[in-house]
Amino acid sequence: MDDVVAPTAGVMQRIGRFALGQGAALAALAVVAAGLLGFAALMQMVEGGPHRFDEAVLLALRRPGAPDQPIGPYWLTLSAREVTALGSIPVLALLGLLALGYLLLDRRWRAVLLLAVSLPGGLLLNSLLKQGFDRPRPGLVARLAEVQTASFPSGHAMLSAIGFLTLGALLASGARRRRHRAYILGAAVGLTLLVGCSRVWLGVHWPTDVLAGWCLGAAWAMACWLMLRDWRRRS
Image (cartoon, rainbow, N blue to C red; front, side):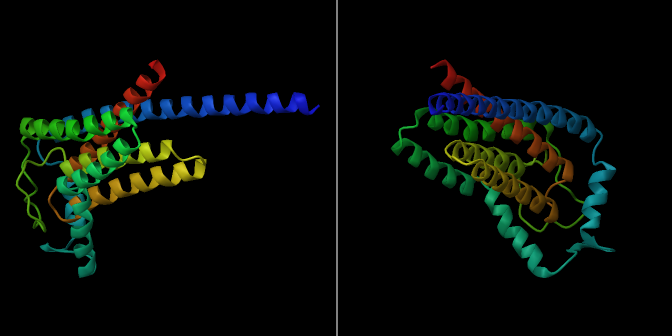
């Protein structure tokens, strides 16, 4: 009886791993498709200038009649300034280099290539899109942080989505338990959302800038992950 149960259990485990892998690929494909469609819809929305949605959200985060004063306690704005730095190029580059060094030591060459393509490629894409759209920064409320580049799409939102989701996917792939993978990916998504929301709170981006950055960043990160996965299966 044990001779029958053991092979059956092994087969079920292999089927479970196959289904989990296919489910992850389908979820990544869904993120790519939804991200690209969302970005296309946001492009059409911002063509005519600031949308009423943008203006309503920014004004809701300021005291009535005082566009230079955010709602809530002062420490909230200080926290937003600290959180927004997590999506800056220096911080993401530092995290990426640390992760790259570990992957090189571990000789995970495909993951090294994924990291080397996703972050620099996303930065180049974001720069080209900013130059192409050349959308002005919000002037409706006071900006609580210094900015110099164009507004659409948000670089912090897009690059944090690429950086955190890529690193999260790499870490989650090495986790054995499902709840550990869920925690890692949840943390990556949470950090991405916090960075984007901080940009709107500080008044340096229209909400549609941040939404577009999230959409395109998530699509780019998942597309890179799918390419890595396909390469692994072919080799």
